[in-house]
Length: 81
Image (tube, rainbow, N blue to C red; front, side):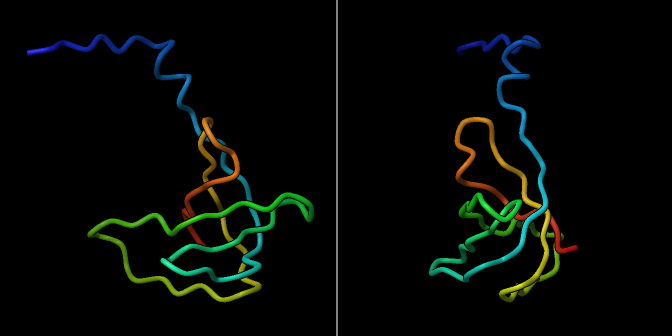
């Protein structure tokens, strides 16, 4: 059995950034093109889980997106505003 020691410095490296954006396009495979701040564009998918309701997004919807620290061009749509 391999033990992994998770100290605080490793946890802070994977923090995410939460921003607000607008859905610009619906892409194949459940992806969406989100515009943030009128200049940056990211590709995001809807955060899902068994307990969440099915959410349908259309172009122009305002959403909250969680961007990972590793790749800020990809994200997860947390909720619709």
